[in-house]
Image (cartoon, rainbow, N blue to C red; front, top):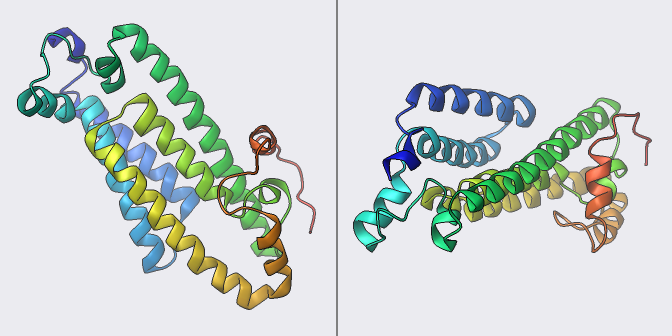
Length: 222
């Protein structure tokens, strides 16, 4: 089992990764009020818990071995490869799939930020680009990235447990934001709400959403 955890104890790497990922998140999310700071705090806890286990101490595996009787000779650093018994192959599959989801989510997150930032500067309602598929692409991207990295690639008791909390918090934030946008744009936004889902694109539009996240051209006013 020790060979499976030869990366553990690398607290310097854990600290560097936590700082870099946190900087990236706050750079593009930029909380403005206590509600957004509360949501950011949940994401921060997710990031710390995930990478502290990934590079520091594998607490989840330790708890499974210590309290749930999992054979210590059978476990590996990846929870999925341990549970399904695929060993290094399972770890590789979960890593590749997790990274694919994470980078897709990051692309959606950044492009959504660019669109809404530009729209605010022009004092207009943005309904094109990513916003033609979901009303809150930044949050959609955040969910996909966290799911890919903390649930698919490197699941831990804390990252899996915190993920639905992140979704609930940002759903609450999205509803609060929509009340403000409704007060400002009125019927135009109400019509937009009827046409476009909040976080999950309609069936068959996932590919279009991913493609739109890679477009960096000028956004047209809707």
